[in-house]
Image (tube, rainbow, N blue to C red; front, side, top):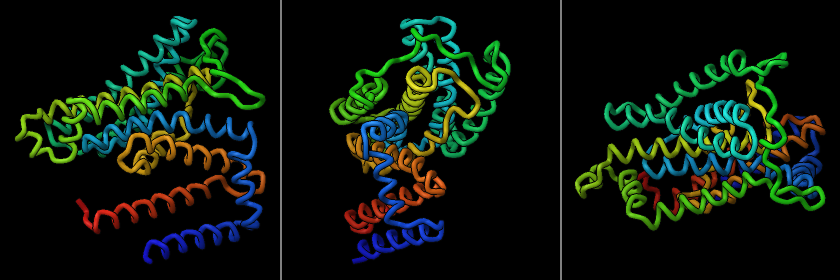
Length: 330
């Protein structure tokens, strides 16, 4: 009954917000659905929004399984995007794309490493360290793209545009629907991480260290090393997301390349509910609301109202999970 009341309250709050924004709720909801999945073009846009969220969701999900709350996915994403863009511009062609993704993974992993080390060996909380690293990453990449990485003919803080042979093309295109290669990488990463966590000894050790570090240590798991490794892998996956965002969609790095994908990924990972394959549904939901929110702007409604929908969904989901666990906090 409490869950139903919570759902009803969420719906009422959302409808009231639409009314307050001066919109007809029926028209707005119809526009939200049509703008996200109502046509091949809209669905293609949703998949585009979903792609970085899926990969970053894998990053945050892996960290959560290790007992780490990686707030720093945003910083690791922009670091990976910035350095991979520079690499792809320097090398060029398909080899440049491969090298760029590799550099994105390494730079993202290295950027996350201090937070993992401080957590493991100095007991510093990863939330604090990753937030600080986010700020440094955003300002560092802003400086780089305003100076050393700035395109020769650029008038603003942006790199040069990747040559055509360094840009990832859609895997296939049917009418107005395009399936990006990057989303396929995201699907493979999700399946790979899900399999690794559930079927391998090292994946089991990571989950054990995250569930109960003391018991895991007693059982012989080197929890400190696992923590550092988990944070590096999480950062590396976030860096891959940044590299693919450049190669597939943006084709250049500029100040503000991320619109907060790393922060949204926290919601994506939490909504997956502890199941890696749940990331498919949660990233699609976030992508659809992002795309649908853009179409709402045509009605004069702020795109940010979809954030309320996501918040309501996450709160209801958390309440359901809490109820299923018998109201325990552990």
